[in-house]
Amino acid sequence: MQINMWSLIDQITAFLGIPCLLCSQPQHEPINICKACLADLPWCQQSCRQCGLQLNIGPKSTMQLICGQCLQQPPNFDLSLAACHYLPPVDSLLRRFKHQHHLPSGRVLAHSVRRDSSLISNNLTINIYYNFH
Ligand SMILES: [Zn+2]
Ligand SMILES: [Zn+2]
Image (cartoon, rainbow, N blue to C red; front, side, top):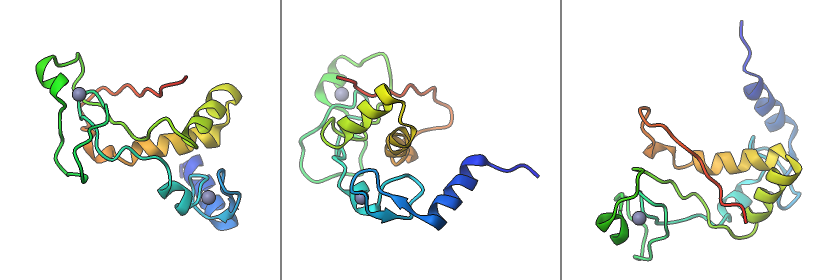
């Protein structure tokens, strides 16, 4: 019988509860932040599906929109997922992950990308970039 280590850790975390990375309140989510803090992340609500830049077009649409720049001069890639803006607390999560190798912060960031994974086809090669300032 093969045991998935991360699944086991998730189950233990959910059972015991650990402090949220952002508010320190006890929480039982497997991604190290509570539901309220997850909802409060500075999510990109509407971005160009090709370059990932923010589109300011009003209410979120389910359409996969492409900006005017990409329509005129398409970049050499087909899809970008812009999960969050580089604003607090995402900036500190990125710094902690990059400079302190803080894996729980990386896990939150990975989860933020995975949140939009319904747009990802199984046949694509995916490069994930986080903009480190
Ligand atoms: Zn929290
Ligand atoms: Zn674009």
